[in-house]
Length: 63
Image (cartoon, rainbow, N blue to C red; front, side, top):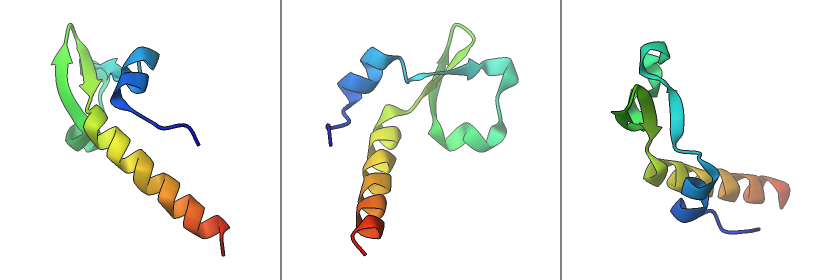
């Protein structure tokens, strides 16, 4: 598996979210900030949770 890093996610533009006026309040814990009317996703949490998802799937497939 290739490593998921903040640099890779930034280069891919993953941090750009929806317009601030069209947001879902349930996403508040995952929003880092807002700039120019766009929410910026917290990539530290994204990387952390991607690793958790990977490990969970890995354990599941090894059963």
